[in-house]
Length: 210
Image (cartoon, rainbow, N blue to C red; front, side, top):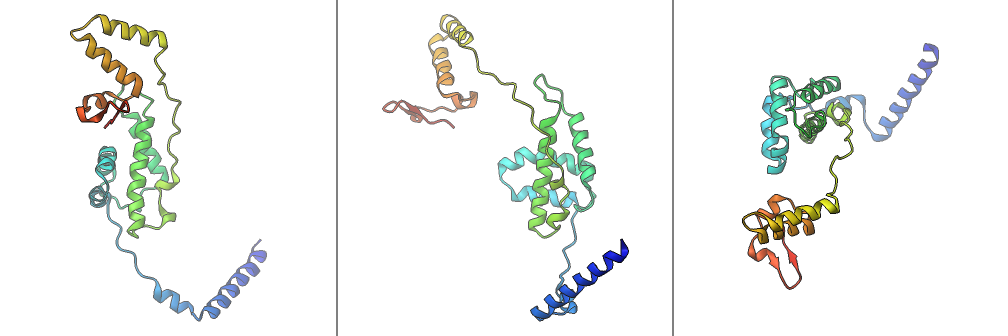
């Protein structure tokens, strides 16, 4: 095996020498052109930098997970954790989520933790702190999402809800209008609460949802 490998190594070296000669370069030129990378920061140092560079929405989604990462790895440099350690942190996060009636076994928490780490490492790549090939978060797949448990309200159940709203309560007319709004637009509660008079377009029977 070694006897076969030696000729291949010599051939690769000869090819590299020919290429360098054609480019007018020497091995010394390559060594001299290598610029040292900036020192790799710790998670505690770099998380605030990234948090200040992303949008408010990203901070809202990733903030709690960056706090978890900083708590676990704050003094460590970005290039220290391995993909296996990231998987361990994901499993620890999934096992310690607050139990909810509609919980999915912490899958969402694990997915968001990996996304938060990928965001950090993507900025580290852009800042030339690590090489793309050295990005451990890119080597950890996100947990596969389970099928959604959400289902549409059956027609007979929706009719029953509308009947009760129209015959009970302090303001049945308003209650029916709100139900009709949600039925026609599928907007969430916030969409109804944020609705303003000038969001209505009676001419085209349209509304502007926010």
